[in-house]
Length: 177
Image (cartoon, rainbow, N blue to C red; front, side, top):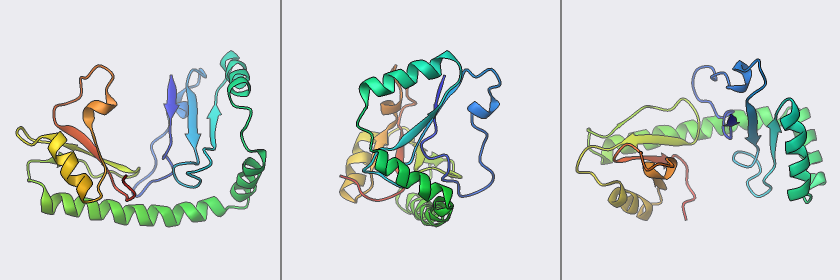
């Protein structure tokens, strides 16, 4: 099992949920994370935690496929993390993204029918909406994009096209292209 926790540090309310890796005494979960979503979008620096024989296999594959990772930038990140700057940055980021989430929820209430349902996320970058019958996700996505709001239809996140009809998520930040 692979757990991809790319924005687990971005928490607005309550305590963070335990990772699957933390609940896995047998060492079967491979845990991955990244700094590219929150801190270094252009540098693509991430990490992986694995145990047992798979660790060696993954390490070998990494060296075969990616020998060009910047040692300098990894070292700079190590220092940045070790002196506690990331925690300060994360606190500011959580405040900013909480405000963006709240603004998005307000806009959903103002511009979409009351029959659109969603849960207020306690963290992360996305809001998952369930649309009522008759409200087409494709059309809503096109209209939202003209206003600078990125949407992804729910079917994007399912391999068997078994997405709930009319479900999609909205990025709660800016920068759509």
